[in-house]
Image 1 (tube, rainbow, N blue to C red):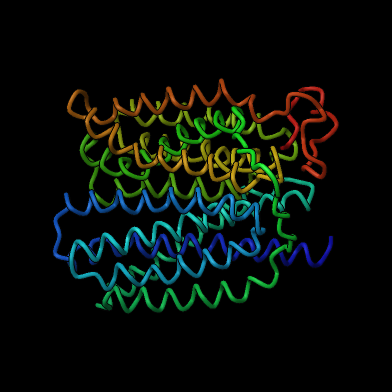
Image 2: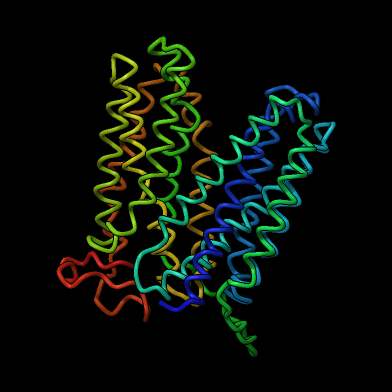
Length: 403
């Protein structure tokens, strides 16, 4: 294996971990930032929409820029913006300042999210085998590390601005160290004459819709799993926390193990059977009469979901490598809107039915993913781009080729 390619893969791991660390550092400091800014929970909820809106805009801007100038140029700039923006929420002392801080942080996070995934597609293409899921697993590891560090500094009484400033410095050093190893690509030549607007293929929008359903489902576990055990099953806080803990651990471990599975059976099978497992897990959690069974259901849910979204990103990027960034931005952007829509959908439903019954909607979403997983398989053997990670011979006839 080319030493340069191995270094590029390590650098990609570094940027995924950096992004997860920055996001995790923000999440663990939300209560302290809210207190410093002197705002209510309701105001915070509205300001978080700016974070999501900024991320969506950052994704749509960074994707085409990555296609035009190369991900190796966009990733470092996005990482610097994301890291520097982390300081801003810790300094905010009003709702206006916090709103501007979250908008900036969202822009940096969204730009880095799409550009590093576009670079991951190039690395995967060069490797000739699936490597995408492991990158997403390392993102989770970065978030977990931030949670540990943030929890410790909060117990020491450190101000959020202090911890976030140190985290920013660490992230900037990591970005500087990893940037030289990114894969280089020449900028796309500037087109002269009448410019034709390139339309996003329907298949990409279909993948984006599937990503929205699966990422909304993931968001339900993030937002409601602990509350489910506490309010529906009367579990103590320590036990209830295991619901999210089991889900998060399963997501991380599952993503670390997914790439060899994709190489063997193809991405369509991973999404199809993974979504079926996730549906079974969500149904188990929804109907569980006791906390241990509900925890097992949320863990099974995480196992099933773990490999699906990375395969959608990978398939979108490989569908047209000249426009990989733009295609990934569509899938990631619409998927991110799914995460934002989760609370807006589940919250009102709790006025009509118990919280656990709202999880049946997630079961339906996972079943839809089972039915739609075939879109990840190229329609014909020649559809994949040259150098696309190949499927093993025994699966080519079944149309389960890795994108």
